[in-house]
Image (cartoon, rainbow, N blue to C red; front, side, top):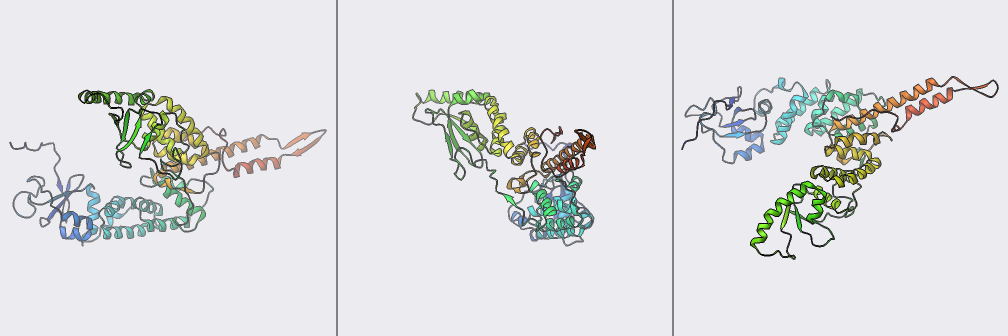
Length: 478
């Protein structure tokens, strides 16, 4: 039986503009928005080792009516291979125009942000010439908009361009004493830029030195396995087992980090702690009961017949240890993992203990806790931790985890810190205004309060941190 004709509502590919509509082309690159770029494979193979390897493989053929040019025999007919790509037509057109021996499309590279998708695609397809051309174009645009060039270079990992843009920014930057870089508001949501990128620029502007080379880094262990249960420096075992006898469920992790790791536990303990796991175990027992009845009585010495599959690895270990009342971790990243697990598996009883441990860890290591909360989507926890950050100066060292935290979250924290510190300073100034110019004591004796007022103002100006109750401003991340 022949397949039914395609629906009239199905989008049909359209042809790209010249010169990517030539019938002499022997390959079609079909974009995500269904635009067919007809290219010549020798040129593409020379421009991209990635495509050279792809072209060595058999390619899928076009259907007879997939493109307006496929109308019969000859070049461009239904025998033309099609290679789907994930880029849209605007990105691919810029990339191909830079790879082809034709005039360069400078109108498509008028703004740094315009080049970001093409730069990412050029790196993906290992296209050296487009990368070089666009990098040179970014440098040419740098004097007019160094911040936009810096942002584009950060998003595409062009370290040399990032450094040059930072040097141009430093030449015109004035230190206002604020923690946040106010000009960063011009980047909007800062998508693709990390807190590490932000910190390195901030450190370079305030301290100087060689950009990206001499930034102090705090070797904070953010590994979800470090410092809990087995101690720092020891490997996490490939299984978890309580010291209580007669375990009757095998929890199996399918995590890519530790595939098929096994964790032995007791069904009754998991059921008491989590209604979600209780329901899943009930389903597993239904399957296991049939297995048991068909194979005789269970053998206590054999492995538990009930197997519970999990998508997680670290979260699973944390959850099992907490279910048995084992000591909770002290590392903010590990506690964040456990908070997520408690939410997912509805472990209400454990959640209270975890929350208390989180509050203690957040008080000791507020910036780490803030980053951990952001990385795990715990915005409410991050907002609460921000109050703890106010208590002292913002740390002047980086942490390795900052490269996985969005720059916008870090910027909001710094802005919040500056706002709260300014409010605290203004309140102290208001207090000074209410202090009389002279204080009288004894019989017609007085002293001026000028020195006292100045001391209070100096304290507010140079204060490293803000008292927790000095402001009721709340950091919002939504």
